[in-house]
Image 1 (cartoon, rainbow, N blue to C red):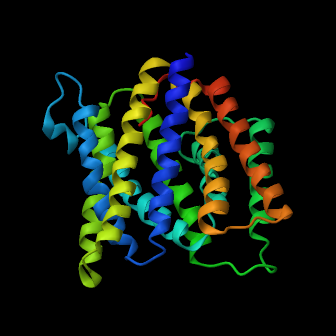
Image 2: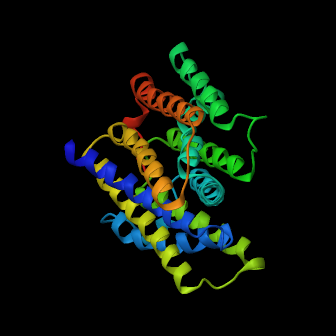
Image 3: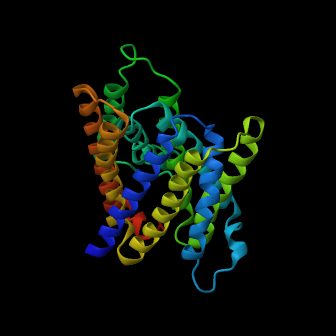
Length: 291
């Protein structure tokens, strides 16, 4: 149990450092280009994801093709919007808005899965959205593209999770991971063409850190969920906030005022509570293959 949870923390540390690399580009490359190169480097992880008996073409197909396409499209949206958000916002603020994902999952589950949600989870949803209002403070702060992108990232991630819930545990990891890489690769590759510029050596190094660490995180997540149930690994994603605050302060000069910290605490608390209640009420974490 301990080893699996530790791998979960290592996984999300790798994701956070990967995000710090892409933020270090400071918008010097178009977001589509960063997503494309990150996805190309993410292909490196596929041999480690692949199990004996898996076929290479299963990177591009799934038992339920609609699931593969949903994963591919939401993967593209998630990657592009995350790069845009990290470019324009402090890391902690970006993560706070992306961490709305469990709350979006609850709402989407009611709409698409006809799932019953009790007053506790609805209270967590309400608290999460109050936290968003505290962080954003519409009318008192300038809201821009970065805020829209971070919320879009959380929503796209939630749609992907609901799709996985609908499929259960019948899809292979190589298909799930493949969709999450091929979608961003194709979308980023096509959309970057009108404004493509070759990265400089320094930009290439940052892109390499972004893509390779994201691939490493995917492998670590797979290993973690092989050792312990996914519901024990999922809460470790919130450790990214500590990395975000540290990187934001030391590397990027980000500052957070007290209202924003209070809003972040509300969002994180609501998200963690929602994860716990999701597992207790539906048990879907036991069925899902988290990739």
